[in-house]
Image 1 (cartoon, rainbow, N blue to C red):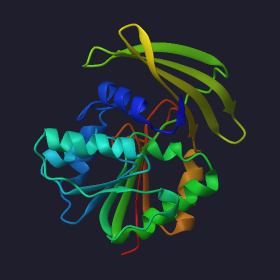
Image 2: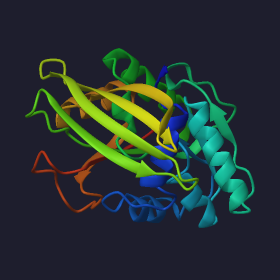
Image 3: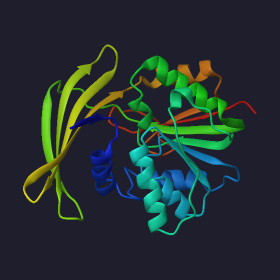
Length: 255
């Protein structure tokens, strides 16, 4: 048994349930349209196994990726090879201490992944580091959501068949909802079964931190971002009005 963040079993499940190009509420289409005019370097922060990044590569864009999970990055490399794509620059790094050799015209964080940084001070440092990695006039774009915090204790189980005939069962338990400090914690147990026998087990503690609409705008302003825009459901013309909407933030570094 292993206790991990995004380990091998989690990566296998992610690759099957969220394959390359799988759009989550229109995010693939949104980021494709957003990035088409870019002529400089693009970075996907928390790029995972390539659901977004590889689809951008296949559209002819030059995109680097950075992620903390080596298992996820290796899956991304493998899928680039399978598709005959030129290998992108993929960095294994912690965004809290990020130091990459490039500056970027555009940095994106899809899928609400910024919410995976549980500690508030650490999340602010992440945003500061991304600001520092932008070219003058460069832009950071990311999307977030507000988790359902109405059930403080819940449990659900699902089954994911693998291509080799094995099966992974996934049990998700909500263990904590902290409304005061704005985070929700789930414990996820992955069990891989081979011919009726338990072959491997992996535990993942997943904490999501959410933000108030104006709270995050103030954080971005304090860091030094300008031209901050917030809109809903990947539609720049749609103002946020409901808690169940996806929130998209755009913010630029001073030119």
